[in-house]
Each structure stands twice: as C-alpha cells, then as structure tokens.
Length: 127
Picture 1: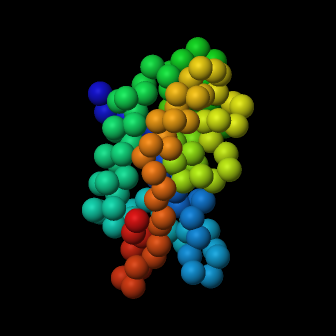
Picture 2 (picture 1 turned 60 degrees about the horizontal axis):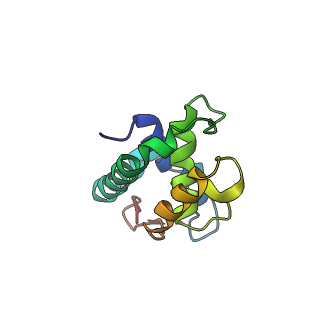
Picture 3 (picture 1 turned 90 degrees about the vertical axis):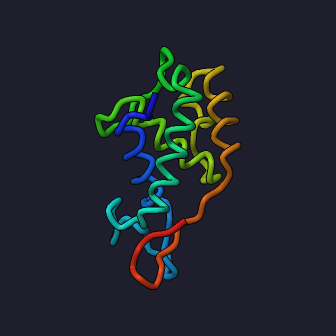
C-alpha cells in the first residue's frame, strides 16, 4: 500500500515550512515541492511510503486528529512524521494522537532519524 497523497504532500510541505536557509528564512517562503531535487524528493517519498505502510492502522485509528487544512488524519500524520523524526518539539507525542497509537507512531518516526534540508548552489532543495 502506498501512502496517500495527503500524507506525502503534508510531509513535504512541513519539511519546507520547518526548515530554514542560511539567513534563517523558512524555505517555504521561497520554495515549494517542485523545487526539491528529484533524487531528494524520491528518497523523501520513499520514507513516507515505508512509514505509512508500516503504520497505516495507527494513522487511521479511531480518534486520530485531522489536519486543519482538510487533508484529514493522513495530512496530520504526514505533518507529524516530519516533525517527530526531526525532533522539532511537536509531533505524534504532543497529545493530539490517542494512546497507544501516539507512542507507536512516535517510536516509528524517530527510528527514521533526522533529516536536514538545505539549498544547493543550483537553487534546488536537498537533504
């Protein structure tokens, strides 16, 4: 099963929103998903599919929070996957997800490790 687009797009957009350039400006102020290097984006999407496939039942659990942008629990999970894996101080563990799913999703996301985005000399976003 592949991750739904709501999950993937939320993950990518959250990555840009929470990452900054060398001047401290959020990447989403100047870049969107189309600016992510194709190889970087492919790896990011592969992580999304792997995480979603392994955790779909927890993501779609009864009581799962929904993103405020209309993307449902899949969108919220994509957002929280990025924040949790990168240690941004919010994510699956911060009280929105019901237990025991919050703990399961938190552990699974942290296992993917941190990712840092940066802007290359060619103006593309890389990890």
